Image (cartoon, rainbow, N blue to C red; front, side, top):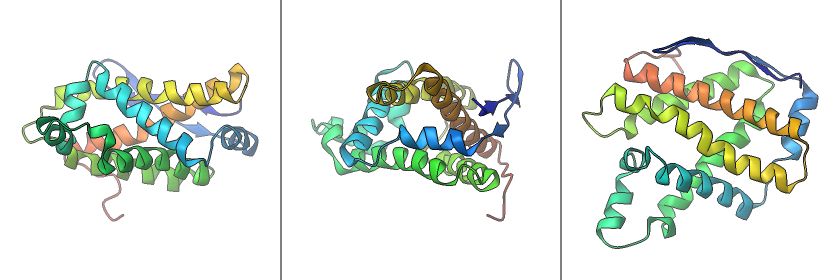
Length: 192
């Protein structure tokens, strides 16, 4: 694949950086394994969130959405709410926006970074940086599994799985960068 991701961003342990090199052929492959079917998109989004909420950071992840606690306190299933449906569709909409604009690197990276910046507003008050630092690894894994399932269902070869894995890593890298910069009070694009 011509899609190449190279990490170089500073974390607690290593220096990681990321760069994106794409080719229209790669984008065509990604788009051919994506879907516009509403039910499939909802299934992808809901599977991602259900995996996330059931994972090791599930309780913390749920705490980012106060309406879930309210539903659970009332004995209602939050999965059956409009809030959950909207949440799921917004997630897959982010992937769709990426697919639409991926060849405009600056536009995509700014969009994803600012999305991460907005997510700081979902943190409960008094959240410590160390607590939120554990989320990035589980989000990426929980997102990739349903995408992998979608691709397998379309009978795509293994190299397309790697392309999607790289794509998900790229998307979450910039969302995470915006999120963690916002935790530190920094915005790389303050006028946007």
